[in-house]
Image (cartoon, rainbow, N blue to C red; front, side, top):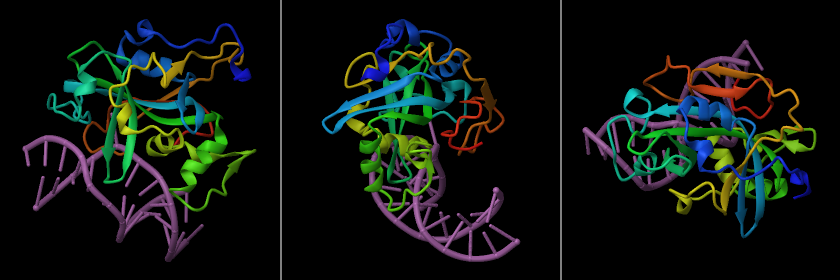
Length: 213
DNA sequence: GACCAGATTGTCT
DNA sequence: GACAATCTGGTCA
């Protein structure tokens, strides 16, 4: 991983996750999601997220309280909440806020950084045609919450996983590469019926891997 | 670009 | 029984 042979980059620890949910959502932009799997390591830079605010948010899976499905969001921040949806897809969230509150941050898009061939293989088993490219990198690999889960090989057995530990963890921003950190765009969330007015979607302005502009 | 139908099943009421 | 924090491939423009 010569890309990260830089002393300022490190695995984000528990303290990083112990903060206001909206602040955490924005702070996750530009960090690197890493998954070490038997197929190899894949790394994606987080470029788009959405915050879900539990009992204060009718769009949240935790709005009506705890169930077997959403229990991870009621635990410690900085763990994986992975849910199954539309009969065939999984989406990945970072749990947020203190225990009992039920907040989560949906990762909607990452920018492929390493293991791009592995991502391509995983995605091609789901769809046939990946012609669209950005330079050498296919744009369609990870520009959506279910797409990135497939590309990065995230499965439901990682439900509740502590994100400070292998095989799934998050690295801090590369401040050397981000001398000017990109501006954050704040907008409404995608694909929800309730809470459409809330401005809880955040993405890196101008980033080509964001799911929708 | 915009809009739309279909896939497919766990989860909750 | 209804619905879902989605994606793909089709149509029309």
